[in-house]
Image (cartoon, rainbow, N blue to C red):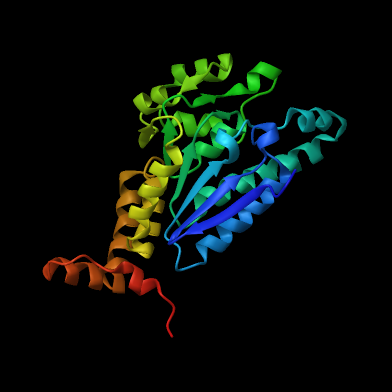
Length: 266
């Protein structure tokens, strides 16, 4: 396999491309490591505003490589678990990256590929893209957070059906269920993702990083916990250069220039 992750930048948007097209962009240890590093670097780059994650050759990700998974039976269970943790670390890196990450999905997002897409902050998908919790088809169980991510959007009954049957769900159906931000014609997911990412990348980075965390925690916190977190972020934001620029721009009837604030000092 060639370089497992292609990295390209357009302005303040970073495009990360899963690059294993001969295997329909199946997951690989190389992708785990490279994606984690790219997300870490992006999180520390003040000139970057948003990230788009996509797949090469019209497919997002076919999930785990079954030829590789078939060899795991020869390993002690502790080693199998350690290899699972490297997958988990990649998903945690997606969720914990301070920059918003948008998945642009064409083709299939199956098994771990579904988890990879849903771990992102927003999802743009073609109408005819196919999502499936495919593990049951080969005698395996859902992994990579699939059950957790789907439970944010569907009832227990629907979740159970999806996991037990491995049936395909279209991008259109996921949009109806509420977990797709933009639904596109086939072949247009990356273009629409880039437009959304460009809009976000022009915003206030520290405020948006905190907003990302608020949205991530909201489902799990009690009201009191969420009020506390919101209060912490709000009082911090009130003293920031971002809010100084934003409020001044509003009062002066002009567009705020947050990108200027992110430029390194000469």
